[in-house]
Amino acid sequence: MNWPVVRGSTATARTTITAWAAETPRSSGRPSTRLFKVNFMDREKEVFDDIEGLILADARKTYSEKVIDHFMKPRNLGALENPDGFNAMSGICGDTIGIYVGLDDGRIMRISFVTNGCGPTIACSSALTCMANGLEIQEAMKITGKDLMEYLGGLPVEHTHCAELAVNTLRSALAKVL
Ligand code: FES
Image 1 (cartoon, protein in one colour):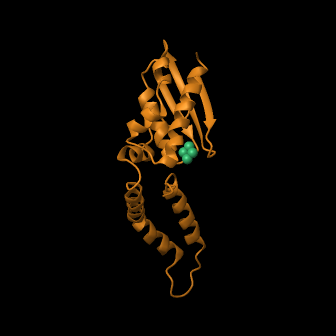
Image 2 (image 1 turned 60 degrees about the vertical axis):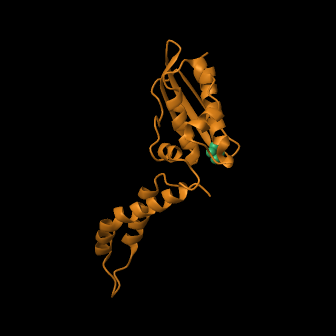
Image 3 (image 1 turned 90 degrees about the vertical axis):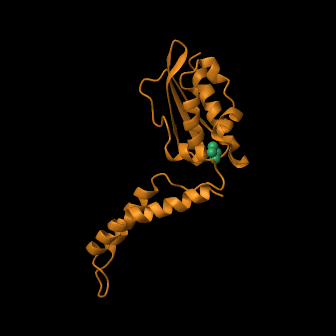
């Protein structure tokens, strides 16, 4: 299955539908735009909860709970202020991951990521920052794509490269501070 695009979908859909509602003419026999918007807003959370539930039920057929958890609630997301190291890499699919590290005496004390990638890419990046946080540089360099996939409870074969990209990006960021 294709990973559903969830990021920002609620806000995007809200904006789209609200814009559509604002353009809806007040023709006879139809509720006014204002009434429609009020009714829609009342139902909005329920509708999106339903949609999210359907998407998650579908995702659970393919992805582990841990992958879904890291995708839905990514840890350490966003740029780091005053990092000691940073690098970004792109995969064969065009997805890019950037990893920031902050070090103290050769140990990773702060770490974060940014990405424009798919759900598994987000999950891999998030999980990898959790795995690497607190490790010495050399220990973090030894984390493999296989380690990351095991931590996540597996990935479909078409997304194993997401784990490799995350690991390689971390290694390249750390290589810059060696
Ligand atoms: S699909 Fe290419 S890095 Fe995730």
